[in-house]
Image (cartoon, rainbow, N blue to C red; front, side):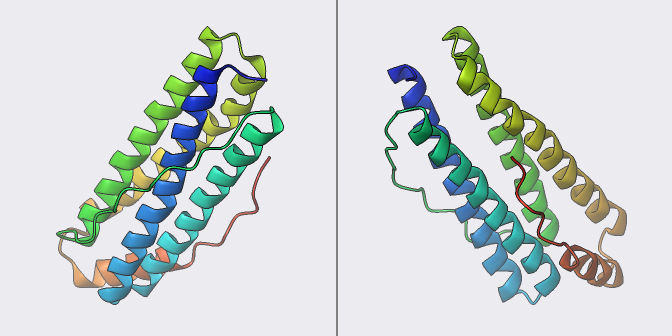
Length: 168
């Protein structure tokens, strides 16, 4: 059993992970609406991946004998100024999630909660990858600047993303 403080914090993180999925679905809809089907596909897979992150957290909370308490999700942003602005928002959101995971791990360490600490290390590693991917895409947008041809190629490249099998 984990402490009540840890249970509350894990449920808050669960909400953040579910919101992440919701946010990426909103971004997917933005790209679909603007005829960037490749980038929309990338966002669709990202939303699914975030849902997997939430599901892992949900299962962990139950497995350690705690209670899942689902909370309302905030309404995600609906419009962005440009495709590049969307990925800048992705990068900033992933930085926010990384800080949240790090804070959660700090709490687990302070609580001497070894099971939660061990569990969260997967999320720490995952966030390094998430931030790196988002930063690379932002750099790609910076390289192509306002090139319609470059944007077309980037849309096609991001559309080639393949769903990765969930890791344990």
